[in-house]
Amino acid sequence: MSDALTTFFDAWSETDATKRSAMIAASTTPQMTYSDPRSDARLVGHDDISEYVGMGPDGTEMTQHGTYFSEADDAGKLLMIAGFVGLGYNADV
Image (cartoon, rainbow, N blue to C red):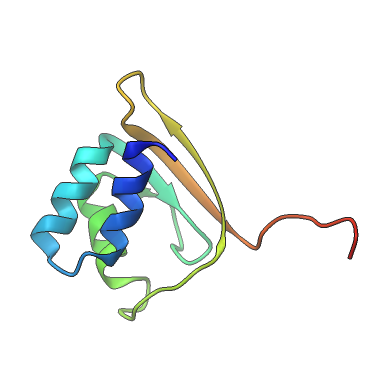
């Protein structure tokens, strides 16, 4: 996992809003977009993403397992993350 992805996902465990915002800003571009099945819409920018990461869609702690796809710029900062519930298709089931 890239340093930016590690920092971004570590921010989900940060309870201090200022530290969390700084971690998100350090790992993403200002135009960063984020979406997952709980986000209701695509979130854009550090402030919207930081608020969502800190509060979750309904104000409660979030735990979600799934698959994430991301894109980064040439400097390694995240441009986009899209999350999906589940671990993918298993043909043996």
